[in-house]
Amino acid sequence: MIRTVLAAAVLAFGATALVAQTDPIAARKALMKANGDQSKIATDMLENKRPFNLDEAKKVFATFAEAGEKAPTLFPDTSKTGGDTAALPAIWENKADFEAKLAKFARESKAAADATKDFETFKVQVTEVRKNCGGCHQPYRKRAS
Amino acid sequence: MLRKLVMAAVILAVIAAGIFWLVTIPATVSVDALAPRTPNLDNGKAMFYAGGCAACHLAPNEEDKTKLGGGMALKTMFGTFYPPNISSDRKDGIGGWSEANFVTAMWKGTSPDGSHYYPAFPYTSYQRMTMDDVRDLFAYLKTLPAVQGRVRDHDLPLIFKFRRMLGGWKLLFLDGRPFTPDPGKSAQWNRGAYLANAPSHCVECHSPRNLLGGIIQSQRFAGGPDAEGGDGWVPNITQAGIGDYSERDIERVLETGDTPGGDSVGGAMSNVVGNTSKLPAEDRAAIAAYVKSLPPVEGPKHP
Image 1 (cartoon, rainbow over the protein chains, first blue to last red):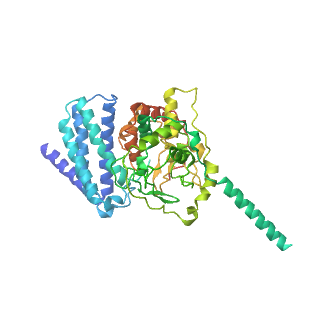
Image 2 (cartoon, each protein chain N blue to C red):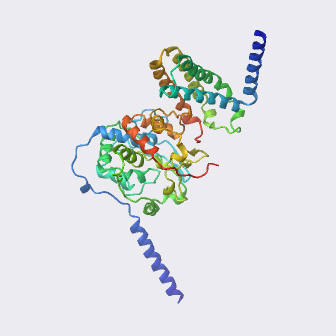
Image 3 (cartoon, rainbow over the protein chains, first blue to last red):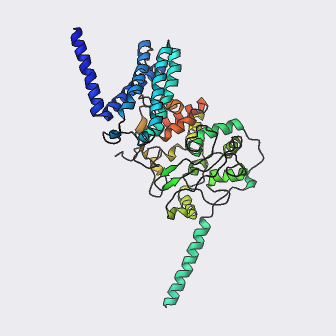
């Protein structure tokens, strides 16, 4: 059983790595999609449309942190266009700033997970952490609806 | 015979030029229209953030929203505009302006030296602001830091450099009407309608424009191609576009930039949120109530 799980995990990891290597645009879109889904869960909890749950709350930040850590490798020079990407050329013109912002996002997301103990702390943390979103969406993402 | 024809043509041309000159004289607001008044700086500050002055008038990469040195590029289909210094600096900003100069700029789109401003400065919306709000805003701007330095000229094709032509544009698109409340609606709705249509100038980006750059009135708020060029798209914010947003969702977008679907707004809307986040909460709620009430209107089709 353990072997099957391990094998599946290795396979899944390998597949993810492969997608990241062969199709970084699809991979980064998937990361952002996951962020969006988690962010929606967070908003729904804040708005009392969904009951607060500490594990789910921490997962929001874990997902954010993972995206912040993985994203820097998903913008190689070969991925400036294609795949219906909304990434702007400004990313590659300001790579250091872009990566610094992602690192800050990952760092603050991790800290937020640790600082979240209950609904009130979650509310404060999620509001703070999400201030990072616009930091990249403003200069680096094409406007689209 | 030929000479008579030529003479007639010349006379007609002179008359036409004269008429053009007359109808395109930049309009002003005279000092006499301004009764003595003590400004309300809190209201001026609210107007500053409702109007989002800092969204265009900061220097490039300036983080401090009170340093209005100007100069960030505003790319449009007509060319690139460089919003001027509107800091309180007497020489380079508006520190030396009279109140009448400022009201004239906001309502008539006319500069203190009597020339037309380009409508990249959204006076088509600002003209609907009340006189008191404009005066309070001016008083508040004068309390902000002086920033030195003049901004470079706009980068426009030669034919657009003849500003007098804008007098013709204004005849078509600047109606001079103030905001009129709808007595059948709540005070909150009317506050929201006023903010959205006058200082906050939402329609300036969230509406399609015709070939002359005028807003297509039947599709106000219905989104369309990004006026700042590129292949970006500005969302339809009538109920045809964001019908699934609740009032509270719209309020949240204006407060934090977070959309109900889990995304965050980008592009110029991030700058807008940087300002609306500093509005009194009841003003954001008012805008949300108004936007939520916009009947569904189909905008141009997103390719």
